[in-house]
Amino acid sequence: MDNAPTSPLATYLAHLEQGHLAYQFSPEAAAPVFFPRVICPKTGSTNLQWRISAGLGTVHSTTVVHPQQGAPYNIALIDVDEGFRMMSRVEDVPPEQVRIGMRVQFRVHRPGGDEPPCPVFTPLDPA
Amino acid sequence: MRGLQRGGAAIVGVAESDLGAVAELMSPIDLMAQGIQRALADCGLTLPEVDGLFCATTQARTSAMSLVEYLGLPNAYTDSTIVGGSSFEIHVAHALAAITTGQCSVAVIAYGSTQRTVGRRAASVREYNPYETPFKPFLPASAYALAASRHMHQFGTTREQLAEVAVAARQWALLNPAAWEKKPLTVAEVISAHPISDPFTVRDCCLVTDGGGAVIMTSVERAKTLKKPPIYVLGCGQSITHATISFMPDLTVTGAVESGRQAYAMAGMRAKDIDVVELYDAFTLNPILFLEDLGFCAKGEGGPFISGGRIAPGGALPVNTNGGGLSYCHPGMYGLFLLIEAVRQLRGEGGQRQVAGCETAIVHGNGGVLSAQSTVILGTQATL
Image 1 (cartoon, helix red, strand yellow):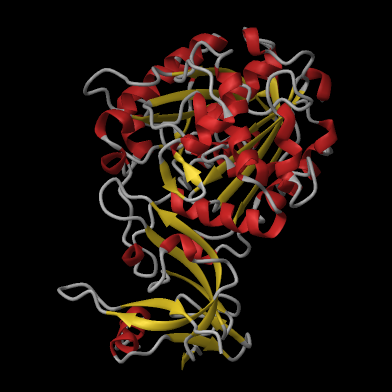
Image 2 (cartoon, rainbow over the protein chains, first blue to last red):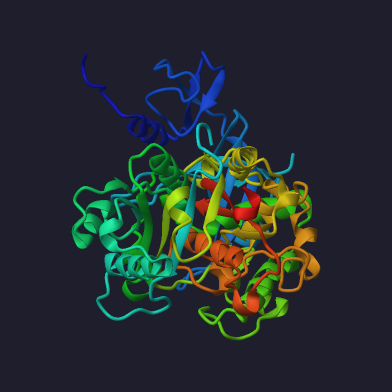
């Protein structure tokens, strides 16, 4: 059997480079899979489809980290609408104002240098 | 746990190594050996009689190999399962299995850490996780803080209730001469301490100390011939629900539900049958979660349950009677000390902090970020 041409993480990061939040979907389990893997954790199947999230979600939990040096910053767990949870941070709002239940929207943060892009979220403007 | 025999083996010796801030250049294996020597003296067995080694430390990649070399026990049965702070509760289950199937007859469970001396970062190198590390969570505190925020949101648990857990631990620690913390603590002091990761301040977080120790287990027949009354392993359970907080199935429900269910079923007991409770208190949220998940109160009621001094000295339910990881000692993987304290309470060796007439104890270890849960139920001869 040939080696896999690419890894789950490399595929995920390539999507992020393109500005997309990607996740996997397991047809057999009829469920999203995140973090990306080589097999579905429910069925063991290698049949995992890559899908692109619409990028909308809800803050599931939040904390403000107080580093020894530098300004406090936010860490949040986001329930993405397609049915998976991920760690991120909510930007464009003071860290202590991030609330559980807040609706948020994905955007790509590009730290530059050798660091890969990462998915962050901003508050979704009330309609 | 499936296939394990209730009361099939007993804990016969327990000891701490040096604690707090240990001598310069002391190694984690030195501390394991120190604990082993003291625990053997506690029960009257000798090193050549040891034929099973169970150990874990974050500072030795192959700790069982290191310990075998150090002790000169090439034929020992070994197990260095490591799943964080609950490793030692899992070792109890594995040692019980090994003793009852004849793999070994005198099992040592050992731990050592010099994290205070060498620094937490050097003692416990954290793996890069591409789905978490870029956001710079202050781990493990931020992970537990996310669970605490969710518990407060869902159940109305208050900042003061979290602080009360730290205050109760401090009150117990003041009764324990071996405890690191020596001064009283108030709810107001906990809340106004240096913030770490909201809602936690530094007083909601476990200590950073050095330390180690050992627990000796043997067969029921041999246990009866030794110096002190045997403390029997009545129940064991284990559940590992996740490794990273992002993927914890429910931030307010831990694997203690399942590990507790297994341990209670094996012991034939329920929460109301337990006299003394030793829970891994890495953060003030932990005892609240584990009291819920182990059936001492309903889900979501842990905050009100612990308030008013219920788990403090003189309260209705003695919890973390040595002062816990919050005020007694926390070298990084604290689970071994829960076992040591439970055994001392069941033997009546608790001194000023002794719980009167205790025959049963529940020990609940926690590893990772609420990840690896393991429960052990212990009892005196009267519970067999």
